[in-house]
Length: 433
Image (tube, rainbow, N blue to C red; front, side, top):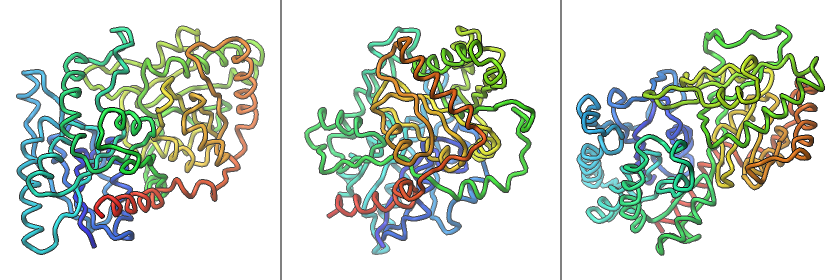
């Protein structure tokens, strides 16, 4: 059994999106010859919501180590809140100890795997590779250094953009020029890195989205949770979107809002039943403003839209999905964007309507598995002909909302968490050999 050291700062019981690949994978790694060893940041040093029940979704014998981080009580005084930067010193010290101890025991660390969007900590991979000759792999769940916002208006740029842009531009090459392999949720991220760094090639890159983990729904079903957003069987059609949102979803959300506006005129009896719930749309605790409601107001739809900006527990979200009449997914104009929520949506066995860029992998998956309907787009602006086509798709979706999706589960099998972990294991074997 080979030792796999996994750097996951926001591991459970944190409720953070970027730890779910690791959380799912630890249930299967040993089946494929790898012993996972987690190094996370002590939960009290993170600013993410805690969800203790997530501990029921990982093995009891999982080896987990924790590191400290400098407190935001002091670091925010100098404008520093980034968890990776606050924990880097402690990661360096702790992992040095683990690598030395495992070698002393004759059971060395074979590979270090960074799976996080706290990318700054990945520069330690180059340090550990030089000091201990241990190869490392980085999981690209989002772009690290991105040029995306340079072409956007200043009003659409994230807070402290000028600082983060320059920091990422400086740190990314340190980690990437020595990396042994890349796992990515998007082929586009791999291609970008291959263009930037000579050592990154198609041979040492693999594209793997997050997997579908049915154990989550088993645990979610045990929750005694009263859905605070809507009541079932009141004659309404309750549609739910759960997850972060922003101005980058203006195109997809505007298409749907335009369709609903049209429907309220032409098929009022059906469309007047609609209630839309957007849950957990803003991850920024310092600026918890609505993200989709302002766009809905531009179409005069504020009366049917309920936006709860704060995140709620992950398993509670799954519980809500199962109580909804249907589910919505919005994509972005970026063809490389993949929605990690897609697989839980499919496992919920609820009708799905996705508004996505035509070339997104999510469109291919939904069509291949027959798990939902897609309203595709190619440009930021949607002409009237396209609106009419989208209107027909969405009207048919609402008309058949009571029917369960006829999902092709055999086609869905390659997207399960176990299968994704198997592919990772094969890739890791190739890298170390």
